[in-house]
Amino acid sequence: MERHWKISDIEFEEQFTLNKFRPLWFTHEAHLRLAWIYITKYGKEIAFEKYSKQLQDFANKYNADGKYNATVTFASIQIMDKYIQNSDAYDFQDFINEFSQLKSNFKAIISAHYSGDVFASKEAKQNILLPDLIPFNE
Image 1 (tube, rainbow, N blue to C red):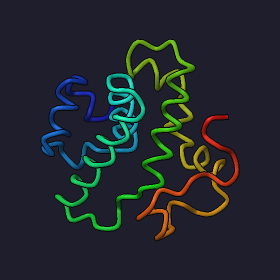
Image 2: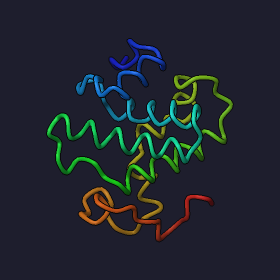
Image 3: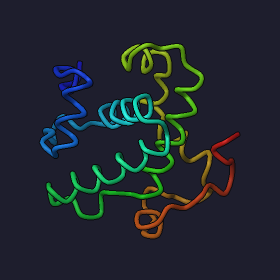
Image 4: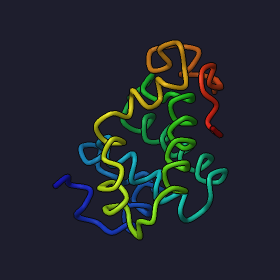
């Protein structure tokens, strides 16, 4: 079990909001959990604003320049929202068990929407690029 499970969703959000979250705990699964918390609590639009700003603050605090990616952040919220809308899960643990491909195959899920490598693209890191293959609303 990953370390981020040691704290509740409320503590997770609070620590991340205050930029006190432990960097070693912020795995891919923890990214997904944060997105799930924000989308289910605030809705997709506000979730994206909070998620984006706080990921940038987190990267800045730990001198991870170049780690933040505007397009991947945008795509993550869009994808997570779509999966949440198709889920009956009551909590994140049930949700991630229901959609384990989000943990194991997230890069491929995003790549289904983009023809280029948005993970490495300088433009994608700095600006939100809309999908050129499959729109997120399909």
